[in-house]
Length: 176
Image (cartoon, rainbow, N blue to C red; front, side):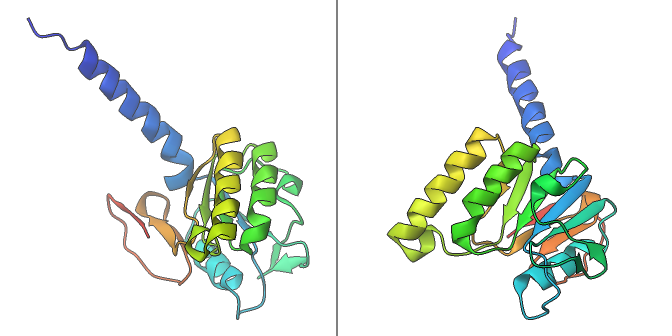
C-alpha cells in the first residue's frame, strides 16, 4: 500500500500558492504608482507599457497630476474606488514603504517594485528594503522586486515593464 496523504498535501499547497499568485499574473485591476505625463520618467514608460494591451482596469497614482495619458489620476491608492489586485511602484525608494502601507490598507494583493535604491546601494537601502518587506508581510502582499525591470504575463496580456515590449500570447510569464 502506498500512502498518498503527503502527496495530496503537496498538491494542495501548490494550488494555494498558485491562487496567491493569481493577483500578480492575472490581475483584474492595476494601480501604477508614480505614473506621469513626463515622458522622461520611468513612470511614463511603465504606465504606457501597462495600458498597451492589458484588458483590466488601470489607475494612475500621482499626487501632482489630474490625468495621466487621459486617465483620471488618483493622489493615493486608497482614493481609488475599486479593488486593486496589483500595484506597480515607480517612485523613489524612500517613499515606497509608506505607499505600501496604503496598499495594505486598500487590500492590494500583489506588487511589482521597479524602484531602485534599496539593498543594492548599501546600509540605508538595506534598511529601506527591510521596512518594505515588513510592511508587505503585514498585508500579505506578494511582490516582485525591488529594483527590477518589471514583468510580463501572457495570460492577462500584461506588460508591466520599463520598456514597451510587444509579446505574443502563450503559456508562460516572464519576471525580470
